[in-house]
Image 1: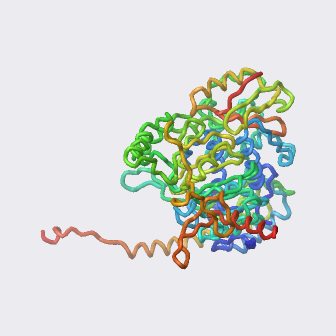
Image 2: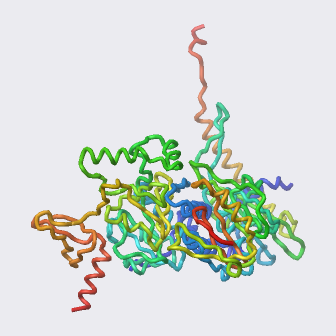
Length: 299
Length: 149
Length: 185
C-alpha cells in the first residue's frame, strides 16, 4: 500500500541510516527495553531523542518501533483503532521512508510490529507480534504525588496506598470508580502501570497475553513493558468488580452492534450520523473491514 | 613543514572536498583498510564551560562521526583515525585513511601535506573573517564619571 | 564505496536481528534463541554483548576470553565487577563476586550477567515459572554450576532489585530475568 520510498536524505545529501535514529540511540533504547522486560511494569528512564514530530504525538512509541524494526518486518500503525487517521498515516509513512524493506500493512494478523495509540486490536495478538503503545502519561501515581523522586520510591516499594485512597474516594463520591481509560493495572503483583489511554474494554487483554507489550513515553522519557503470560490486574476492591464498557442500550438492555459489520463483541465508537441519530461502529477499523470481507465472501 | 597530527583532520575537512576524496580513494584502492573499531556516527552531548564560574554544562547535541582503522600499503602501514563534528561518515573515513597514509609516510604524503596546507589557509581565512565580524561588535565601555571629573 | 566494510558481527543490521531474538527469549524465559546464522563463527556470548554494549557502558570480563580487538569493537569501558553494568562470567564454577543489584528507585541498574555454559540443552533440567512463562517450562544447561542458582537467588531476593542472566552456549542464548523462579538442579 504505502510505497517504500527512497531513503530519507538530509540537506547535505548524506543518507540517514536505517530507521532514522543513530546506532547509539537504538542501542540505548534496546538496553532499556531489555531491562523493562526483565522488570515487568517498571518505568525505565531513557534519553528520549528529538524526532521530526513534536513530543506528545507518539515520539515514545516511534522510538521503540524504530529500535525494533528490521528490513523483514511488517508494520501497522493505528490511532484509536483506525489506520487512516492523520497521526497514524504519517507515522506509517515515516517508517516506510526511513526503514527501507519494512512493509506497511493495515491487517492486524499480518503485522509483526504494531504501534498503537489508545487501543489494543480486537484480534488476539500472537506470540510473534509486538504491540508498541504511545504513552502520554506513564506514571499512575502522578494524580496523588507531584514529586517524581517520591513517586519512584513509592513504585520501588510497591507503596500504592494513596492510589487506593483515591479509588475509595471515587466510590464514596460517585458509587463507582470513575476512571474510564488509563486504568491503573498491577503487573506481576508489584508495579502498577498506566496502560496508556486504552479503554477499560482493552485492559483484560494485557493479562496473560501471548504477545509482548511495550510502552514508550517520549515526552516523559520512560519505557515499560508487560511481557507475555504475565499477570496484569486492574486494581479494584474485593467487593467492587472491575467492569468493562458494556455498550448496552439503557432502555432495551440489548448490546449495540456495529452498524457496518454487525459485530457484537468489539469496542464501539458512538457518534451522531448526518441525520442526528446515534449510531455505533467498530473502533478497530481493520477488524470491521475483515468482518465485512468475510460477510461479502460468504454471500 | 608538517603541522601537528591533531590538526590534520580539521585541516583536511576544510580543504577542497573533491581533491580530498580523490586522493583518499586513490590510496585506499591500492592499500588494504581494516577497521579497528566500529565507525560511530550520531549525536553526542557537547560539553562547554561557562566563562564566569567555569562550571561545565551541556551546550547541546552535536553530530559526531568517528573512524579508527589500519591502513596497509606495500611501502608500509599505520593506524589512522579521525573524529569530526559531522554526519558524513564517508568523509571521516577518508580523513582517517589520509591520517594513516601520512602517518606511514606513504609516497602520497607530499600531496596530503599540500591539501593540509590548503585547508589550514582556508581555516585561517574563515577565522580572520570571523575575527573581523567580531571586531565590529566590540564596545568600549566608558565610565560616565570619568568625564565628570 | 567509501564507508568501511565491517565484520558481520559488528554491523548495525546484525545488531538489530540479534536484539529481536534476544528480546524474544527475554520475554519468554526458558526459550532458546539460535544465533548461529548471525555469528560467522564468533561466540554467542560476544554477540549478546555486542547487541547492548557501547562507550556509555561498563563491562567486567571475568573469563579473560575477550581479545583486545573484541574490546575495541565493543567500544566498552572496563570496570571492576562490583560496579560493571555488564559482566561476562564462566558458568563452570560458582560465582565469587558481588554484582550491582540496582536500587529500589532504579532497579534497572542491576547488572546483566552473560554466563558462558557448555550447552543449553544437554544438562540437568531446571524448572522455570514466572512472567513470560505459560504455566511452567524448563531449560537444561550443562556447565552451569549449582552455585550460580544459590548466588542468583541471593541477588534476586529483594525484587525489584536483582540481576538478569543471559546464558550463552557457543551458538545459542537463553535469558533468566530476575523475576523467573527456578527449581531443580
